Structure formats: structure tokens, C-alpha cells
Length: 441
Image (cartoon, rainbow, N blue to C red; front, side, top):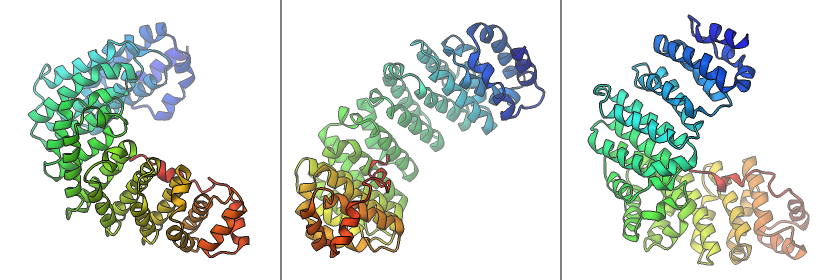
């Protein structure tokens, strides 16, 4: 009875049903079995998608998202009509159709599903349903390939090399900037979930892309940051000379007049330092990287200074683990404690706190530098900065580890014993500042 009501009021509606109307049938969707779905729901869905897609697209997307069914058996019935809508002139239709393609991909466990979906999209891009002469049509199909990255991980890894190669070909063959950016975005989505996306030709592709004009160069920087989300992606195929070339290119971009380009370069260094700090710290260009970070701390744009601070802490934490010299990096973070932005000051304190957790004894040799700087922020006009300063002092001086540390803190912070013991009693993570170090860029 409820199933018939759903078909009549939602799938056969002459007007677009509201989201609330579809959600009212959620209990029905959650208990729906394959037989009812196949024999009753799918025929109505496909019929209405062909007849009035603008009315039922959103409702069918919610249906597929909510049912507790493996959709492997049904994806090819939906794909032709969804891919047609994914290249429609109306943007809203494209967005909803693409989201639904992602749902189908993510809820299909059959290993043959993903290659079949890829081949269907690939064929359309190749002209099987006519030439895609308008950029939004090609972008729609590229975005459909991006949605396939929501598939189960094992399936993604098997297909990633072929898809990566195909996208590179599309990039070279298309002369429209917007389409190229969509391709870079799709590559980034796949690279962020599978290291197999980053084949040797992708590495050389990125190296060449960083020399393109500003907009496409930013797209390649975003791609690098996506790749760095998988810790071993950057190191798997990149040779030392390629890494060196990449670093040199980023160093050059980090000093360009366009602040967005400088910011992109710093964010890329930040992403590399997240999982591959050794690539930077062991580079012959490391002194130049530190010099760039130092100059970036004086940049007139807050996002650039923030990205520099985040990169500094990751490099510092790596150096602390490898027992390398840390004095210069610590001095730069102390410099950041005097930044005009309270957020940069707060983040810098959180960075020092994170570093103290890794190697307190190494930081202890620099207490004469750290102490006065932390003491100054304990009186900061910003409450979040003061709170972060208290937790930073708690860890840097190890105030919970004994009376001797309290005495040392009194000396370097120029505080009374009562004031220091008050800090020692604070909950260690109550400021939530740890997230500053763990932010994903």
C-alpha cells in the first residue's frame, strides 16, 4: 500500500515533490527488498526520468541514497538517463544527476560495475551519442568520472591507472580552460583515494602544468595537494631530480606578485610536509624553503602567513623526531607569535604545543627564547590566544611533571609560583588547539 502511494504521489507527480515529501517515505526505503525495487520502483523511475526528469531527479537521488540495497544489478538502467542529464544545459539538473551517479557508484559492490560505468562515460566523451561541442557537456562527463571516485576502494585501485591515462589524454586534447580545470579536479579526487592514480606520466604532467598560465597553474597546485593526502603517492613515482624541480618551481611561485599564487605555493609546501616532510627537510633546497617561510611570515596577506605557520610546525615536528637542528624553525615560530593576526598567534602556540609533545627535551634547550615569547602571549588581548598560550606553557615546561619544572617556568615566564601552578592544573586539551596541527590542507 505504501509503495503504491510512493509511486503515485512522488514518482508519478505532475509537480516536483518537496524534499520533505520524499523523506516521509524513508521507513519504506529502509525496509525495501530487491523484488519490490526491481519490479515496481525501477520501471516507474526510468519512465519518469525519460518523461519528466526535472520533476523526479531529486526524489530518485534520495531514494537511491536511502535504500539498503546493493545497486550493482540496477546501475545500467539508470546510467543512460543520468548521463544525459549530467550534460544538460540546466546546471541544477547536472548537479543532481552527477550526485546520483556518485551514489550508484558508491553502492555497487560488483567489481564489474565501475569499469562498465567508466566505459559508458568514456564512450560518450568519444562521441557515441554525438559530438559534445559545448564545454559544459564535456565538463559534465568529466565530473561524472570524478563521481566514480566514490566507488569501493578495491575497485578504484584496479581502474585508477586506466582512468588516469584517459584523463591526461582528455586534458591534452581539449583547448578550453574550464574543461581542463574539471579534469584536474577529477584527477585530484581519484588521487586522494588511490595511489595508483599517480603514475609516472602524471608526475611529468604536473611538472609541465606548473609552468602554465595562472589559472591552470593553480589547478595543478590543487592536484598536488590532493595527491599529498595519500602519504605514499608523492614518493612512489617521483625521482629525486623531479622532486628538486618541483621544489624549485614552488620556491619561484612563492615570491610572485600575485598573492593567490604565493598562497597556492605555500599550501602545496604545507601539503607535502604533511606526509613527506623528509622530501623537504632532506632537500638541498631546505635553507631556501626556510627563507621563503620566513619571508612569508611578513606577507601582507593573512592566508599566506597562516600557510607558512602550518608548514613550519610540520617541518619542526619532523626535525624534532630526527633530532636535527631546530633553532631556526623555533625562532620563526616565535616571530609568528608577534603576528598582527590573533589566529596566526594562536596557531603558532598550538604548533609549539604539538612540538613539545613530540620532543620536550629538544625544546628545553630553547626555553630562553620560548619563555619570554609565551609569557607575552599569556597577556594577549585575544582570549583564544591566551587560552592557547596557557596550554602551550603547560606542555613546553612540562608543568604536570614536578615542582622543579614549575620553578623553571617561573624563571622563564616571569610569573609567580601561584600563577604557574594555576596553569599546571588546567586540562591539557581543553582549548581544542590540537586541531591546528592536524588540519588537512
